[in-house]
Length: 214
Image (cartoon, rainbow, N blue to C red):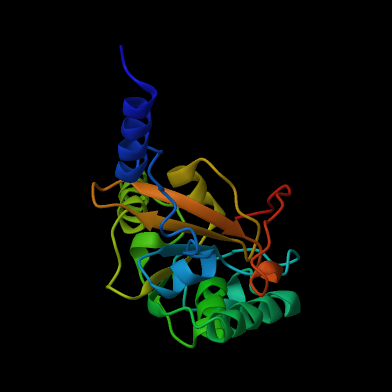
């Protein structure tokens, strides 16, 4: 039989050895990175649908995309949206790498007003009126862009169209709305957030509305 003295000794030994549950909150004061902090580190692909356009205009000639007079162009709101997006990126210190756009003037103008640069490429130009082979190639190219990690410390910007984005993601974007992706090492990608143009300043959760024309 154990004596009270022996039980007391055992109790003291166990207490000294720390038999209580370990503390897993050693870094409890370490705060997770905010969304903006993540963007500041780079590594994201940001698809932006061109900003607001003049719905009274139409795309007349898709064979000569250098002629902006034959296309639907940004309206005053669209120009303002583009400028505000660029201002938010600068104020939030979000690094911008390449800015790739469709050849349509509304996409190039959105990029230049926001980021003061644009690399127009036919590979991500609208699939409207495109031949079936070109259509599939452009969809494949955009999908690869979204799932490929950009230059270290930078974010890749893509300014394109609703129709292209819907084919790749199954989702619709408002004019000026952005979808932010984080490519993974295994080739997959995570949709981190969608942001309406007026919400860049405070990174508020966007709300969805019915999308308009491409």
